[in-house]
Image (cartoon, rainbow, N blue to C red; front, side, top):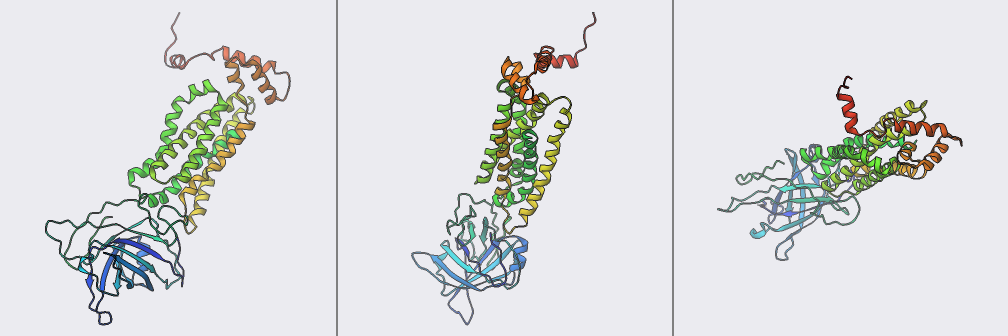
Length: 427
């Protein structure tokens, strides 16, 4: 993406198929052909472009049997809905057989006002030339035109190639309506445990803030747009249903490490995602990490924190989540002020807090002593309690854990449900 200022020259690249042309009647250039192109663009850009003459069209080649025709000049004549009409005049008449041939145009528009605007990399424009009458029993299919700035491909913002690639361009359903001569084709055209709670809220807010740019970049329909936002919630819902039994089997600490790894990998995939399907997969993986964290962080705090500070510690995840939402909104706002906001960076920045949480969990987080006692690992539970309490004698704490697990620690989920909803029998 580029922005234009007064006196700047930006090289544009257009490639497509000629559908029609019109002989010029100008006395100055009697042997010229006029090709008219309609470009789908934003209303703001069209309104600014309207009436501006392109300073110079550097080169235009019509490839038909090796014959090249140089383009003389071009001008944006007027807005046409959400489109701009570009008229290009060639130094010699195009042959009648030029219909359907490929055309390549390099244009240098000179900006006459101090005005900022954005040139879209993924821009599809459809030819709207002066079409001759449609041949009988023949359907004229409008082609796609691809436009990008010099030195940039249409799939990335890196300087790689001047040739636009078609693989990752968004498609538009074109519905041509043929009209008479001199008429135009119209188209319709996201403490270690408390810090971990910052990232789920940040994910949702960053996704909501970047979905506008994702929709433009990948040309998403309404259904796919909603699916991209909802994939993390779907993943969180699925993983939450089985997070309890898995954490009872593996332990609290390993599951929190797995959560941070999922979140970190999901952020990296979102930073790289070339299309909407990879983005949805990354959002699903990200949702798995969110579901594990939201489920296990309160459990871990309740099982390891002393009773006198257990309540305040359980409020910290909510506080850090609100802080993550605020920071996410601030970051999206700051990045949206740039000339070329990048939604991949908005989502990929979540890898930073995830990596921070992974390091803290891996090197500083202790296993839950209650889980160790439930598995019969008394020596390991004693060592953990000694580190948490800061004293050697933890026999009282060990006795409380053993007593608590003996009073109902072995009760299953079915037994708890029966205790809640079934009335006790009278003796």
